[in-house]
Length: 90
Image (cartoon, rainbow, N blue to C red; front, side, top):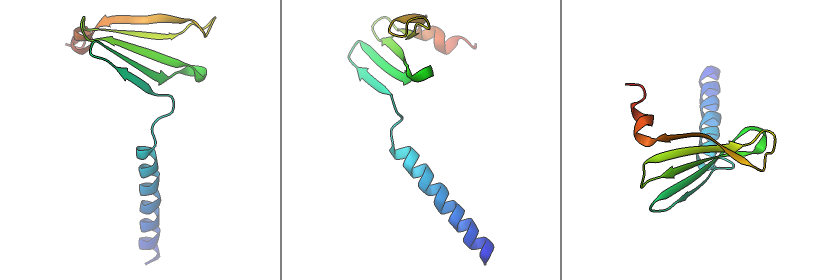
């Protein structure tokens, strides 16, 4: 009987933790969507944010991250066609 109560207790605690993490949004994520562009920020290293820019008209995506020497300036890390992103492994 004690093992069953312990198992039920562990399952209840796990359920509460999963519920809290599912309901609470991730810190620092922000998205803006327009007909032609999407901007998405994702928490990066050392408290800065990485910015993803998607151009829906042209079908390209660019990734910008802070310059290590001057965190106020962002530099392009990668710019690639959306089609190339999904066919790279083929």
